[in-house]
Length: 148
Image 1 (cartoon, rainbow, N blue to C red):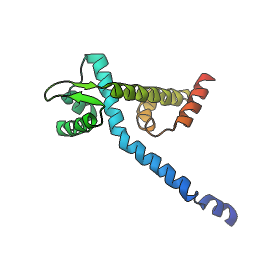
Image 2: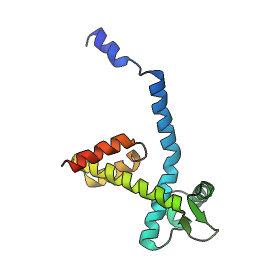
Image 3: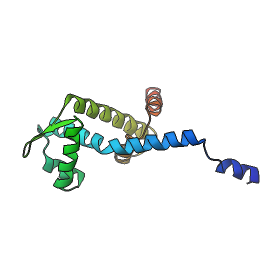
Image 4: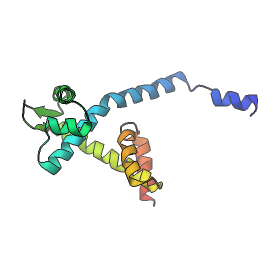
């Protein structure tokens, strides 16, 4: 590789662009847990009729205290309602967020499968990617899927 080629590969992106990308990733990380929780709560309600803290703790592999702290945040943010020793319920805003998350997850998973990735691996990978993929990229994934 020539020196010029090596220098081109090492160039940093413009500061504003790089900072904007890192900010988007930080925002995605901060909303990731809330999105996972509302999505799982919706899934539990749809399959078992209710979502309880103990169910969430088991499925996330965390302690009940962790779930309780997260639920308090979700109540504060208007995504769920909860009373001690009772089921957890999504608010309208929580239901909308859960549906948005499911949609993103489906699109990412289906896109990965369309590339030949094993369905189980695609399901697992989609769980992380769904929180970070932009709307533009999701739209491109959909165009790809619709063009098959």
